[in-house]
Image (cartoon, rainbow, N blue to C red; front, side, top):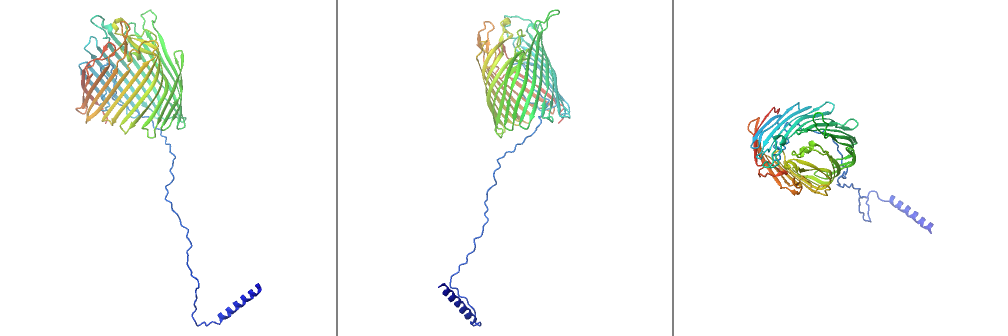
Length: 556
């Protein structure tokens, strides 16, 4: 069957071929399409463009800068004024290289402050300051005189070393007026309270780390302190500090230091007699610490071996500071231990009506655990707050002596005491034209072991300062200080009582009248509040003080 079909197909093909050859070639050829044709283009390959942004780089570059510390060497430096009714002059005059400030008032006669500068201002800096303040109040023997001279200098060498030193002298003379002159009589020598201090210091530091990443800053301070009593009290103080820091990479460091704080106190005996009261009061520290320092994190982890004379104590030394990336807010915490030196010189700086120490000098050892925060709002407003829990060992307290009508203060040591501290600060700065600062310090003392009350310690202190450049070459300032009264011990029967609260406000102006001459005027104790910071010693009432400032040698 298949063979027959194949033959038929072959025959059909041959017939068709013969028919085509027999066609008339003179006719036009045509092609008849018997089926429909639909052209279709092949689908092209298209290039797709997706507009997607590049992947976000989450890596944050760490930029480390080594910025050498800068120091301002200004010819004007406020001096410390110890009369409780007169706070130091906080008016900041125009910066000049040399000045002489002279003033008089109804209480202060005279008032003299001077400052002189030397050096090229680049590698050598020298300043000489001298101050003299005498004052006399309305009460009998309410007078004092304060004199001090100080020379400070800094020399920078070409091999990145910086030498700094100072030498000076202070002579403070007070008169004990905290008694009733109508019932008690004393000679001028018995009432005169004079203290003389010779002091000096020297330090060396490298401004750039060595090739092994070392920073060092050895320094020494010495002072010789005497009084005018009979027998004469003398005290020699020396503080030697040897700190060393080793940087480890960019974010770590190790500190190692040694401190020796030495005090020798004695009374000058008459010729041929032995020294009636010699004693040494020394503290030694070893300060190892591991540090972590990044752009927004600081950690110090350490313990401090210390020797208070022959007694060993291991003190904590832990600090932490965590800040935001923009540095506008940070949290702080710490657990630290430290000493306040027990010395005649330091106690006199706290209470100038102090009697000559007849008991052994003791160092105050403190431990403090605290937490707080600080930050800034905009470029002008800053704030900070802290809460702390403190423990005191051998805290010096001041009580009126029962002899001499209570005009002298004696030291009574509290063996152990605790306190809760609250501290806050606010400030607003508008360049150098306007500045306002305010602070508050609150202490709640408790758990006293040996004394009934924390004699002489202020529970609350509030202060505020304002400085305003109201016009060109015209400055105004305002100072405010207030406190809640301390507990005192009656010199007659030892009964505790609380004194009166105190508040003080000072206001002043300063303006230029010539290129080299300024006028200044200050009013102190605007409330005329004769409060007692120390029992039986009222401060000066309302008083005024004014004068001129002669400035010269301005290299600008």
